[in-house]
Length: 247
Image (cartoon, rainbow, N blue to C red; front, side, top):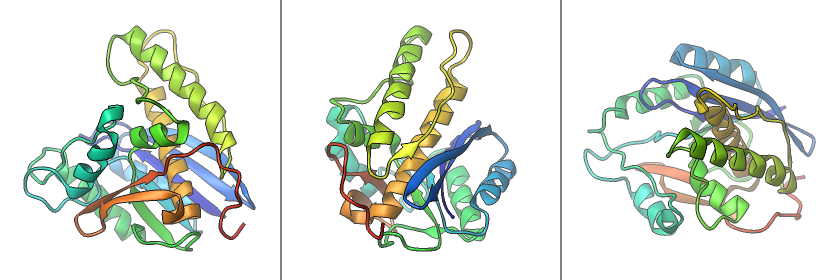
């Protein structure tokens, strides 16, 4: 059983959205969605979901940071392509207050056997971690003119946009290759939308992990490099119907 785990990591120690997708035969199914805060609990959940099989942990956070200041090469490259879609990256460097949190998380994943998967071929068996960027992925996978803006604005605006994103995920991911069978929590009419936002983001991360494992650079772009930091983004295109490598 291959498992793909998405982590919408709380960069500053806030709760993280978590999702796991499992591949059985040629079918992807959403297995679990969770939201946890303590890093030990998050890592324990990842271990439990991954089991003893092959797994990819796809994290929306900078996992490799070498630069003392400025911006990583991966972010500079990605921003050239996606800034016009409002999907640029935040600048990451060792001087930022979140840097040690995210680097520590990546190292603890390595301690659990998840090595960096920046250079794996399609369907490589093993346990890997990769950095992903859901905003850029939605632009390409869903054919958007600009990102769905569910993170800023009034509560009414954020709620409306989050419902739009939820609808896109539910309608588009089952139409792609690989297709994902899933359900998602509803966006609440009152109260905070953040828990649902984190969970939907984690599902997107997990799907990108599956897409990378199945297609690698055939249908993904690797921005940056393993040494200085890298970001995996699915390539643009309409819903795909070709057979995945090895299927």
